[in-house]
Image (cartoon, rainbow, N blue to C red; front, side, top):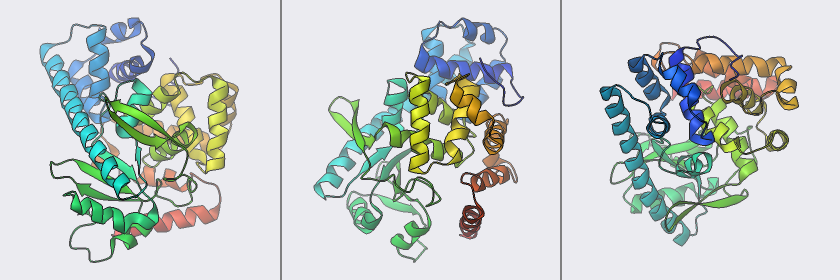
Length: 360
């Protein structure tokens, strides 16, 4: 293990990390068993919920197996079943969306969710995802919205009371939020980063690959280089305050050599991921040992801004409560966003964007 970024290394948090690690490494489980003998299971269950990794944890603990308190086992089993059921519904709905958008000649990509779960863990139904996230061209928002309306979706954000055209909303923000007829949430993205200056070249026409998420259902998602850069920026947008985000990235990189991870990092810089990629890799090394001890980790660790961003993310991840549930808890997150690209110009534009979002 390699936990050098900060403190708050409780037994329960370390156990949570190791259970997530098992989902993509299939380690022998001895360290998990040793931690489990010392764990407060009620506290551990709360952490599972806080970091939204119940499906990963249930799969690990069931496979080893461990003798859990009955109420903890029941709770994890119930949560994992709910995740799988939700993801199965999402797979069917994603297939319907893909067919409809293809027939309407609107380019579509699926990001995160089912495709990422399959790539990172080999199982599209184990990762918790509250939303179906899709990406369309920015100039197709009106057509995409009309099609969603035909499919029975209801726009929930912006609210119905907002009279501004949806295209104007999307010029200021990366997504709108919709609700399907059977209650699934869909995020319709016109870009993948809050700041237009981050990963500006990654879009619906970027290199892609098809991922089979269920028999007969293949969904298009980003190719490896673009997906890595996007996940780094996505995690950085919330300072990685949930373990599941860095677990997804570590799972995706598990079979990559340190040399390949270095190549992905360099490519992410060309794609505009900025310091988000360094923050992500330092955090992945500290939690899951991803490329730990490599020349790349040592090089990134010598950069002051990258170190600070990684430590800030570690502090957010290890808080007992989500920062979004604490008064002024997101202040550090907003501060880290200002540092994702160097230069005063980016900081001023990012601050302006944040203030605009707060006013709306």
